[in-house]
Amino acid sequence: MRNKLVAGNWKMHGNLKENAALLEALISNMPKPGNNADYAVCAPFPYLASVQVALQGTCINWGAQNISQYEKGAYTGEVSADMLNDFGCRYVIVGHSERRMLFGETSQIVAEKYAAAQRAGLIPILCVGETLEQRDSDITEQVIDEQLKAVIALTGIESLAKAVIAYEPVWAIGTGKTATPQQAQDIHQFIRKGIASQDKGIAERISILYGGSVKANNAMELFVMPDIDGGLIGGASLVAEDFVAICSAIKS
Ligand code: 13P
Image (cartoon, rainbow, N blue to C red; front, side):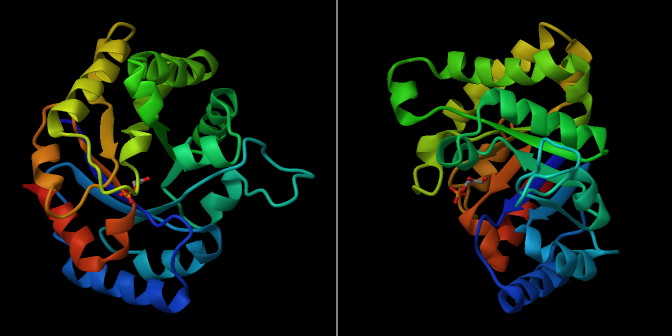
């Protein structure tokens, strides 16, 4: 049975007080994992220390939203994999479309960040996905193929044994527009088949999450699809009740 994961991406939201309240509510109400399910929150860098203190020993893991591709050195403003390890991170999101589009991260840079995360024993959550324009031009598969190939070219297909992929159609992020379960399933299956053409075992085991306006009321219909192994949740991960409901949907 494949591992399932629901990860919250807090993006640039929250503050010490709000985070403490959110985490307290999550800790009290989160369903016990099991059933190969894992839950995590990916917090902004400055809050990782307090998130670690709050979540240590609970059933919720945590991670970061970005990482430097460099190990250490004169890289002002960057945060290394070892630093994330110091704060107990298990996961790190790499290649989120907001990083690709707003901060100029190319697929090559994303691949280097993915490699840096794995070198330090962190699990990268590698985001891929197409814009609306690309979908309308019928090049969704090509776009995703290019994003995945950059990573595989740098780190080898076997690196996917220690990674999670998140399919996040850009047009569904923060827009309230969700891919239909079938649209999402089609792309997840495409991703899994592409990996299977190089390594069947890894393709069968890798968790592929869906992200893009996953809410409490649509999580279940997405999570029942055969190739959807969980979600990467933006807005709804900031509301304890909603995030708990989404995590419960993966369990059942
Ligand atoms: P929303 O759930 O707010 O659409 O964000 C999705 C996302 O970008 C998660 O990484």
